[in-house]
Image (cartoon, rainbow, N blue to C red; front, top):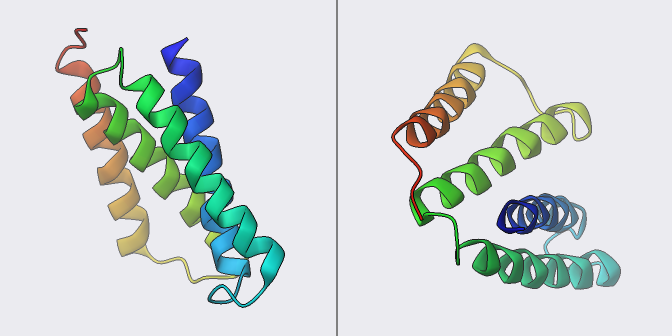
Length: 107
């Protein structure tokens, strides 16, 4: 169940961050409300996941998944530039998460 909580935390973090972008500095009411609600749910589920998953692994997966998906949304939806340094940096983040997971997961 803890992995489902982590997936939910990641999903709400991605949603909240995307809504933060379209809130235009919290000047649009509905995206602003969605941002705060999304982060509340995100951290609620993350804290539930941390009951059973090591913090180093859970936080690495949570943040890396968020970075990769938000970067993709930024490029595809918000037309942000894509360059070699950005791609290499994202790959390094993913490799770091894989390394943490290979280091051994214990409860």
